[in-house]
Length: 99
Image 1 (cartoon, helix red, strand yellow):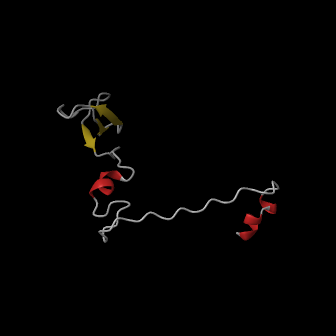
Image 2 (cartoon, rainbow, N blue to C red):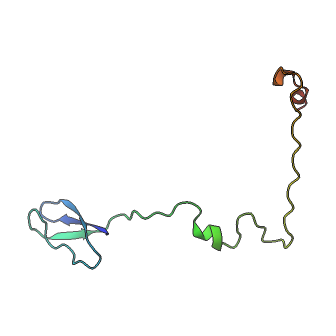
């Protein structure tokens, strides 16, 4: 149910009232019975993340190359580092000195 804000013209209190969209707007302050005006307030609705547009409807989808009709070739695997031969850690390792 939406929350509407009203401001009393006499006592200047700001009221938050839960009302259905079909309910009539509040006309008088519940405390002093003076007329109230409806306020425009910030919406709490936020879109976060990539979103539906960038995930499925943009012209260039993530990971796809729009300029090429050939499938992308996978990158060559990097060779694994050799196991430690000395047991002394990286300072005594010949592989560490090479890099």
